[in-house]
Length: 320
View 1 (cartoon, rainbow, N blue to C red):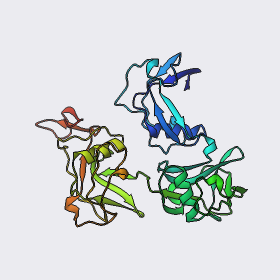
View 2 (view 1 turned 90 degrees about the vertical axis):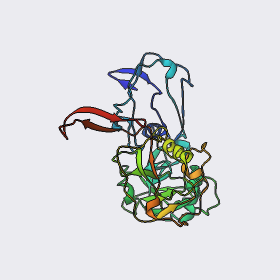
View 3 (view 1 turned 135 degrees about the vertical axis):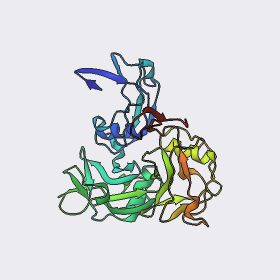
View 4 (view 1 turned 180 degrees about the horizontal axis):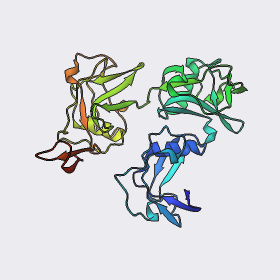
């Protein structure tokens, strides 16, 4: 990164795929495939920037990401972070969603990234797209209004697939069109990774909820164990699951109960790789909703025998 007129490397502390996703898209290099460290591409020279980025993965530039106040230390070039992007040759990306498997469809053509409009777009093309991105099958094709307005004033249309292609480049080539000639296409793939912990005002503790068929639902605690919780905490970049009770209570969920009888082995990178009952099949009520506390859950309180809003500052972290 160039700061104050000086180029410097970035420390690998706290760097993850969400940060890399923002960087790759900012550089028009597709989506992030891997974060490599330490110094897998050799050590740099000059300054080493130690700011820890806390990107959501939906930002358009790295400078729009918040800087985490929880980790900041000295670093050397032996810990320079490396990133592998899919490259513009991949020709397609999903933007504005919760990750690289969910969002507004954008294609790279004639040296530019542009929005793909819904003329001639079909579920078959969505299936090819998800498969190309390594995101499993397509769950939903929708208007991109759920992902916000596209920023690009370049638009394409005319992509048509039979459904058995391995790459969108094997379908009909996108053609430049007026951006007023249709609506942006949005796609949700099977490995969208849309899960969250709700009810604790923190992304790292709460009631486990997953997104399926257009709505958020809970997970039943039948057969749920600490190994399953570890997979979720790791997927959410929230550290490890802790057994200590959090100083908050989590209310029951509402709506559908999507998953039951989850059985992770512990080496999975996401909950979607774990076996479970078929989606929506269960014999549970919301009193059995799974709740999780991860080690990166932080909550502040003021402790005093006399006052409610004054006292000694304490933080709940790593179960303590």
